[in-house]
Image (cartoon, rainbow, N blue to C red; front, side, top):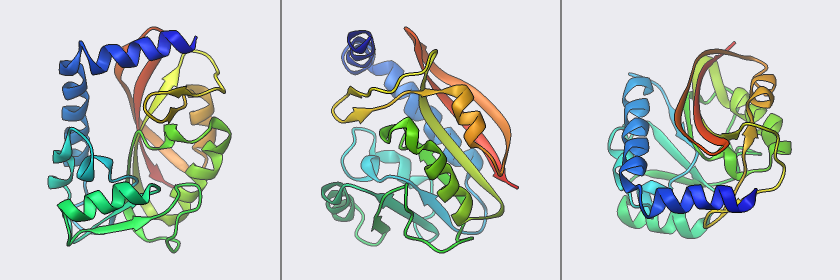
Length: 197
């Protein structure tokens, strides 16, 4: 099983760079279409703003209203070097270092799938806690056609969620959009857009 998933990732990295670019173009679209006109935004990583091959995601979000949360301090340092005036914070999505009702929108673009599936309820509970009433959650996660507990190493641990588990963990949210961005050999990248109820 692990070799199948690793093969998909290697294909994306080596032979199918066009597909990765398509995924990140889709991320840009998600940011553009779902960024609030007013209010605070939380993006749950800053990899692309500091280290990634696709550093252009941050130009869509207003840096005066956006906070970037990152667990890896080295990534934060690189992001700060690129964007010294932006709001980067160290923290874990399982225990967000923010007050209740802080954000109007949360963008999790494949951050949640770096924590074990057993932590999914905790993460979504934290997202719910820090969102304002009727706040929007835009989440992208790698999913699998069947339940998997073990991660694969894609240059970092990558977990795969079973989509019915995501739906069950969305207590307190009203899901109004779901789509598949990319699919291959039993795994797929899915997007979920919901409002806090």
